[in-house]
Length: 314
Image (cartoon, rainbow, N blue to C red; front, side, top):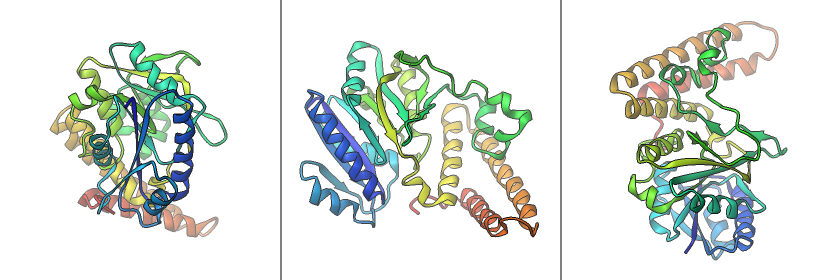
């Protein structure tokens, strides 16, 4: 088999149906032998039953619990046979010849280990999905209240570099909505680090591939549409805590245990500050006070979950 599509699903029945429809069209027009695997992370919305009923040629792997994105991808990879693994978020749709273009880019560059497409939103607007590897200072600020402060923005400058439109480029890393990876390169580094429940696993994967001498490609000729947040948006407080805990893990694996401890303290402090500011806003009687109160509750829960680590399977 040439290509195995691996799609991880968690309570996203309708986006998953659209994803699988687009995958079937892309596979049929690619000239490649393609197999598709859906790993269902204990969905409760009928997603798995929909796959069984409507997509009989798709291999369905059911998980008894939500084991996280990276672990589910690894499970799908182990069950697959393709020389190239294409990991798709369940809210992604392949556009035109995206699959063919992605897969073709890998053999053209003998040192390439991974390729990512251009990503557009539902309105067709290009999303800046290419990243540089973060610096420790930028990593601390990213995803916190401080990234929006005028005095700290310069520390994040260049994190999302501009890429030349239409030009295939070697980059540091690409966001994980859709990733094509050579199986032998993926296997050589042990696949995704399952210690990342969700978030940062693609950054970690790209870093480890490059440490083994493999390059990461941005392939703008391949285009996918990404709805964004279909699973993550279901539990904002939980997933923000997951994001920050993944950032702590990345700091530990990339720099040092000391840096991870600094990151954990910094992120907790940032949440405390954000909570205090939202509490002050909530005391103001004008405007959407109910919305501000809800924001306080969300931040407070994120802080508690981040501090206690209670985010694993919620």
